[in-house]
Image (cartoon, rainbow, N blue to C red; front, side):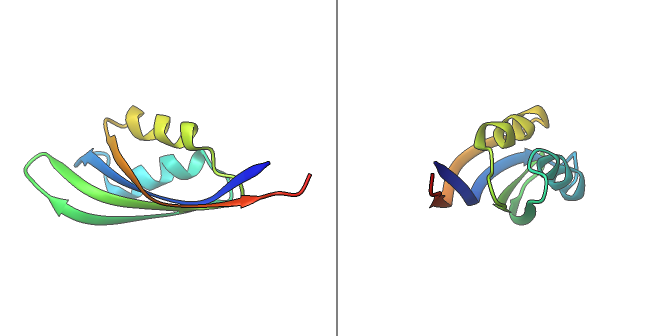
Length: 87
């Protein structure tokens, strides 16, 4: 089995929800995970942010669903770390 341990996403998000609300909603999808948001660019209506998420078994589909539910779009996966578990 493969476990996603770290993922960094390039995301375009509206100004609202703010960064704290945005990262909290993502963290709710991955209990025990650490979520870090870095603002890369700001324009009139949107922000380009890098979202770094670290945990034991991240669920990409649930994370991206939370992101799109807040009106944001994932542009790319910029970094990923996986671990092969012994069965």
